[in-house]
Length: 169
Image 1 (tube, rainbow, N blue to C red):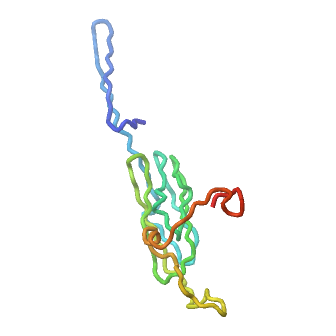
Image 2: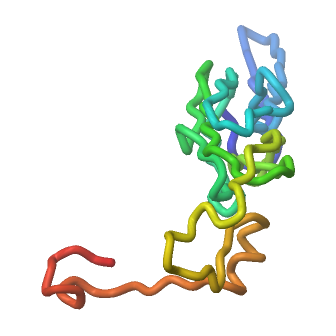
């Protein structure tokens, strides 16, 4: 494959006795490609898995920033050839449908796949509040990762920080 970013050519010269002939060969730049059996993946609000068949002439990797909490993509890299991409939907507790676009990258090429999930079964008010307690605040984690970043943060604790355990939290 020509991964140089430019087309390339070569001229071959053949001589025999006093005769000469030339042949010019040209190879176009290699452009990674991938196709999906569906342009849009639709999942149920109750959760579940949808399989999309792929055909690729190079390896493609999912852009992790596009993966939201309500679904997962497996595998993270689409291999060259024919394969399967599994989209697993978490159960939705929202009455609203949700959607996003997942990007796949190979070199400087980008392809997208639309992911949608139907409405789920909302939780009855107070369902998470045990008797004797009062709900002060909750977050159903709906919205984009950017929306959630304003409300949440993570802490990276070195091994030994929590209960002198070897795990990294």
